[in-house]
Length: 259
Image 1 (cartoon, rainbow, N blue to C red):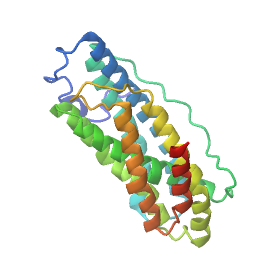
Image 2: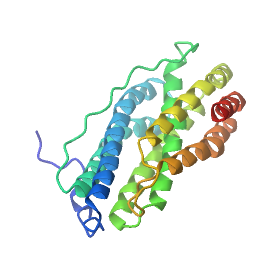
Image 3: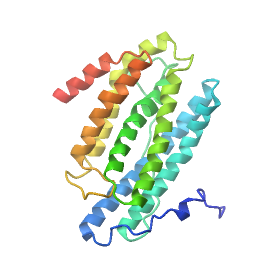
Image 4: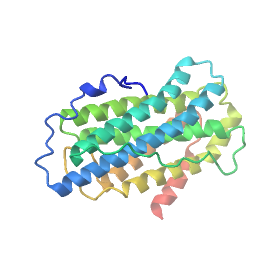
């Protein structure tokens, strides 16, 4: 093992600075520690996803080295995010928490999708849809963060999340995304958007209805609102912009909300 720090600037970040933590009640510290620890595990899981995406993007022959680089870099980004979140969780817990174990990530499977389209749909699903929603979520977290150390961590996560979302949109702008693929994607979009929405709402259900202000964590109602707004105002308009009909997905989401 090397003794080099994987991210030289991490040790200098003011994660142990004057956070308003000691004044919190023990139960509040425990809740916030658990929320940041869950986020660390989620970030590590995203790293596993991007390890697959990096291989897909490299094999597409996009002719765009920046997108290939972003996809490869995203694996390291997500591991770094996990460590930042673990460090904050440890600060709230008052002890060093263990490195998380990534959640299981299965292979891509989409109903009725041709095998040759599945890899690109996997990139679109996890980048253009999921990471776009993630960017909106982190923007909400930034609004809810009052102290410089927490704001610095969230800004770093959000900056990378924007790049990760770009990967999916860039793939849809490539020559490989021809009219046939776009039509197939429009048919699959209800499943892709709905499954991502369901995953985010399930994650929201792990959060309490009320959280302590100023610590970059969001309540269940706030997360739900951010997810729905991101779908309506970022994700679906984004697909319209790249000539993928979002109407079937919009109808599927409307039915789910009315159920």
